[in-house]
Length: 114
Length: 113
Image 1 (cartoon, helix red, strand yellow):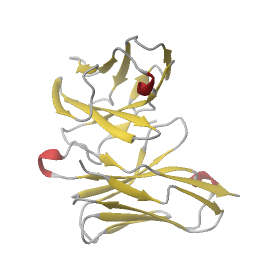
Image 2: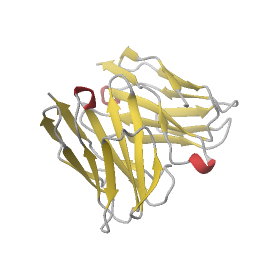
Image 3: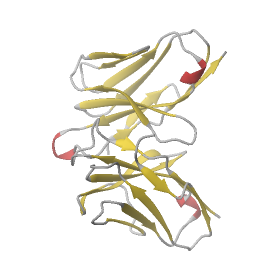
Image 4: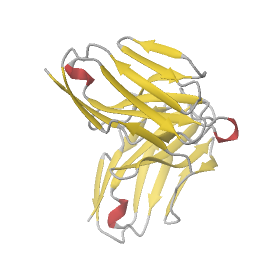
C-alpha cells in the first residue's frame, strides 16, 4: 500500500459526460501529480499541484482540469468525454515539488467511456 | 518532446532465467528510474539511478545509468514467478523540468514456473 488513495477504482460513463476523479495523497505529501495510462501512449504526465497551486502542466487536454484543495486532496475533472479518454488515471504524491524517488503512485482509476 | 524507447516489448522466460531490458532516449536525463506495475496496481519504484555510469542493485535486480546519460538497463537474475508484471523505465531531465517524469512504454514479463 503506497498510502495514496484514489477513488473510484472503476468508472463507466457515456460520451459527452463529465466525471471527477479523486486523489488523497500520502500524509505529509504536498505535491500531487496526475498521469494518464493508455495502451498506445503509455504513461503520460498531465498536471502537478504543489501545496494547492498548479505547478506544472504536461499533455493535459483543455477539456480536463484539476485542483488541489486546502486539505491537499486533489480532483481531476474530465468533461465532454470521448471514447479515446478511456484509460487508467493515476495520481502520485511526493513531499517536495520535484517528481523524484519520493513519489508514490495510487492504484489508479480505470475510466471506460462508452 | 522527449521519448524513451524501451525494449523488448515483452518477454517470456522460464523460472530461474536471467532477464535484461533497456531504455534509450533521444535526449539526456539526469535521473533514471525503474518501476514495476502489477495488474490493478500503480507503478512501484524498484531502483533509482542518479549518476552516469552508476550501477545499483536491489536484491536480484541490477540497473545501470549509461555513460552517455541517454540509456539505462535493468537486469533481473534468477527470475521467479512473482517477477511477472510490466517494467517501466522513466527519466527525469533535471533542473527546472524535474517534475516531468517521462516513461517508456514498458516491458511485459511473463515467467513460466
